[in-house]
Image (cartoon, rainbow, N blue to C red; front, side):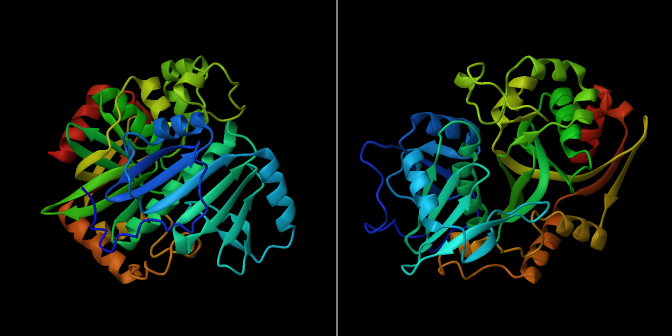
Length: 389
């Protein structure tokens, strides 16, 4: 299942920096794209498999499209960090985001490699994009440095699939039976709050909390979730006191695998957990995705207000186009990760055409919904039934 990845990248060449023969290796596959990850820290690979599964298939495939080596080496990190100095070649936006632009220092080398430093998590990326290889040096294997390898896998996946025509929607998604409902829209529109209520009311399955890939397949559109850190805001937890109590006593935090919960202290501040932890918290199952049944744009409302409007024509197209994660035709990160073989990037007009095709086939709704409706499980069941028919 997935957009055609014709011209699949060749197997990484022997000239690429090699991982140690003592390293463990896993592959992570999604819609025809495979990234191989080697690491000298088995706990990192276990955490990664738990965070990304079942959305990415974990295995040991012999071939891959890209290779990542994640090495925990405090001395190696300090040495490279000291070598590159404090005067980068440029600052680059390295990861597709939905909010404020974040730039990281990048040093370019004469052999085509580039070094990117993330001082906030004490991680260094050494990128050899022409050889389809990234080496990641981390000062520690536990804690926030783990996000470095997860982000690299996800960024490669996002850029590669968008280059092949897949649409990346900024939205949460729930599986109802084998059908997927996307809750789309910008930040602070109640997507996560509605998602949690629907999962509990419907005993649905979690597909996504923040990003969903969509593409045509035969006579339908398919939606697959992209795993991300789940941020639970105070307002959401106030509406679900039982969930808030379980969370407070769980010890959950996104950098921890299940086996590590309770062994390490969670960071203070807003609860940020992994998709697997969210499923455990709610007592629901995950789902990689399936046929897309509807796209809903929620808006919070006071009290018991519920208003649903079917969007048609240009209004539906405009709503879907506005929901593209990172904006229409955003390719600011591609040059850092992918080689020139990915020159067939879709233009903004191509993306808009795909949005129009999806809006013509998949029902699109605007939904204004108040907390009284969210707290009424039968009303939510009826709402979803009316959306997907």
